Length: 291
Image (cartoon, rainbow, N blue to C red):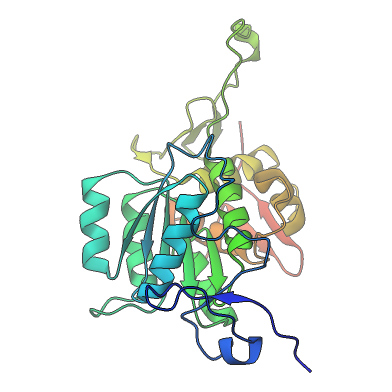
C-alpha cells in the first residue's frame, strides 16, 4: 500500500493541501514537499549568500510558478516567474539572471527544448528543465540542446534547491589568491593542436582562422581535460570527476551531451570527428597532436 505523503499546492483560496502520492502522480501541477521543507512564510530563513542570485521561472502552471517563487524567495533568492516564451525573452532582455527554470511543455508554439536551444546559443545561463514526462529521450535531448539539469515533476523542493546550488557553485569562477601573484613560471602556456589555440588562463579557444570560438563553462572544462590527456582513453566517470567534481545529481549522459555540443563547435564534421573520438563502452579519447 502506498503511504500518503505531504504535498503542497499553492492556491490562494485553499492554502496547503494534503494529497496522497496516488492522486498527485496524475497531477503534474503539484510539488512534493517534505514536512521539514521550507514553506511560504517560514521564519527561520537564512538568506546570506543568495541576495545577488536572481532566478527566472518559466512554467504555464500558475501553481508551479507560485510555489517555486515562494519557496526560493524563502531561501533568499529573487524570483521572476512567467508563463511563456514571449515573456521569458522579455525578462532575459530586461535583466540578468543567475539561473533559468524552464518547463518542457509551454503554450505559444515553442516548447521548452526549442527555447533552451535559443537561450543557450545566446547565453551561458544555467538552464534547469522542468517536465511532467520522465522520458530518457527527453532527458538526453534536453541536455544536448544545452540544459544543465533535467527535473521531472512531481519533485522535492529540497532536491531542486540542492541541484540549483550545485550548478551555481560550478559556475562560480575560481578566484586566484590575492595575497601574492604567482610566479610567471607557474602560468599555463596555451595548448595548441592542428592550428587551434586553447588558452587555459584566459579561457579562450581560437580556431585556425584566428576567430574565437565561444564555449560554455562546461564545454571549455571538458576540452581542457581532453586536450591535456591527449592520446589517453578517458572514461565517462573520469571525465565526470575532472569536470564536475563528482556531483551526484549529474545525469549519466551529461558527458555525452557535452561532447556532442563540443564536437559541433570544433570538428569539421561532427558526425566523423577527428579530434574527439568515441571509445565504445568506455568513453572518449582526444587524438589531435597537442604541442
